[in-house]
Length: 302
Image: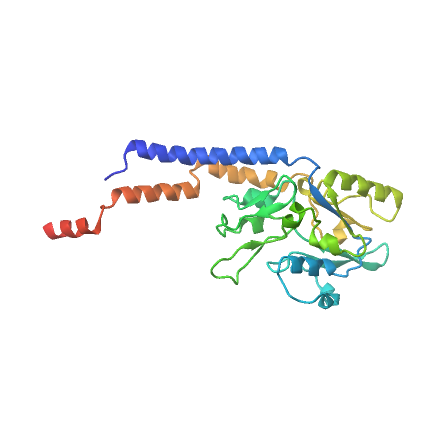
């Protein structure tokens, strides 16, 4: 039986409506995330002593490793710059502070951007920006396209290539389970030198400005993450130019502003791939013979 015109147009209508709703939802999310009332962390690299206890606390809370805390006293890892991975959501690196003539340490993890490129690039909504601050991941929705990994300017999302059956994209989730129960992130809770300060983004920006003003010359007059890439939930202070820290040098324009016009142009002009596959499936189902028995029967008559 051929697919009739009404069924065909209905299918296209459903696909178009889904796309429109997705665009509307994205616009609503975008407008709701411009506030500085979200959860945030201020990282003072001048105070960081490179103890790596934050690494242990993160791995322990997320059950990523059962290594004892004492093993994180190993400083030989600072010989090279590391990035977060599928089994390590945060790492501590060293960078050279030319003005002091010595090395300083910096914690690296998902920045939980105000306008996350990873969420913008995800075609199925597996990554999304929670209005409270965290960029969270839904493994059930993920199709493993890994566009998020390409889009992230901080090179944070990692993929479980070694997991053949149920691979996921893995990254820091801001310990959202702890936040919802009134606790601070695991890394913040263990920091011995008050390098990490948890609070509302607007309050932390004010605190960072005050710290720069009160300690003239100790910090460069710049708060990394205030405007970079449209702003991030994790903010940084440093005693030297941020170009030396390993953090990427970004413009204030959100990364999705640069990339979305390509993606949206494609989806505006064509039926989205998933809807197209669904449509082809309906056509195949409607045009095939109803049962194998009928196929055998027709074959016998010929």
